[in-house]
Image (tube, rainbow, N blue to C red; front, side):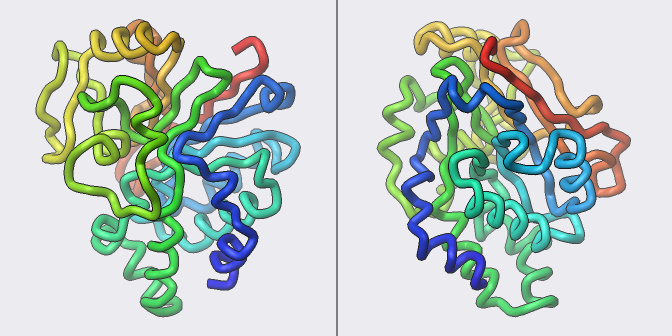
Length: 261
């Protein structure tokens, strides 16, 4: 709990705009994008062993730090500690599991209650309600946990979202954390999750063209190789929890960029 209180006392909100803007200067050393971790703490450590422990490399995490795995507390505490120590080199976005109604069910609440108390879970909820939901890399790569929204036409709409906030059941914020690409559709489709939408390759191309961007980078889905391209490489899914939940035979991956993008 004291770690999270430290986070608020040092006013780290100032580093947590709704859209993080990461410019060219951040790309002069190694910059890595990481997808879902889901409490797989040992795999998180392997990720840092591969890419370099901060501040030897810069990192952007795309959300879903808790639930499913056995060590959500170690995972989120290490990530917050790095954010506090290296606030301008280490970035955390919100995933759909950084939401009380979800992590109450899928493991994080039970882990907090079993190992500490419910008050700790509530404190984390307050923290999650303040996390940014998107990042823009050198004005060319848009990052979020889930994906696009039929309500999203420009980034000012994301900047106007007020915080702290829970994740609603529908609308722009919900879609940014929940939507998925759909290979066999055009436009917008129903999502099998029962939440948000799917979007076709045409929606990705149209959004990038209108906003003069090159790539959408997102997480949210298990993919066999740890990464998967979509829409003629205009969108990439990154998933960083290998052998997810011990039930999948997937690899975990990170994506790196440099000043050449």
